[in-house]
Length: 186
Image (cartoon, rainbow, N blue to C red; front, side, top):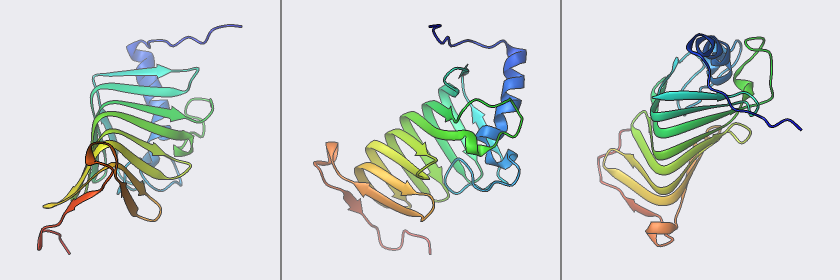
């Protein structure tokens, strides 16, 4: 049995790969699709990823961005130490690829997700396309203006717009909230 090998890609091949993979990770480039890869983003919003390094693992169909990664998608920004994008299957590059190929995204932290007037932070983050949910775990803080909610895990259902914060860890198993009158925008 032949062992799957990961490979580093020369610059010219890398550029071609990015152009081919862009529709797979950016819904704005995929015809007829809606939604972005970050909460609050739409299909018309551009996706920008700035990182120190990108490795493409052909056999595993994954992209790994590392080195102070900053992702902007419409009104939302994600900052992390490392982001891994897992793709579905192995298709011909650029031939009918769409955001349907994105299966899962993991972010290693510290992770900061800014969407409109809310800021979420945690030790790790992930997005699961099948569930259409965003997860932040480990020392989670969600702020909106002067209002603050702290817990160990945050689950945001992109479809319904419902966020759930769970306690645990450093919060003694509890969710801690501080609300300041007049600080939330209508």
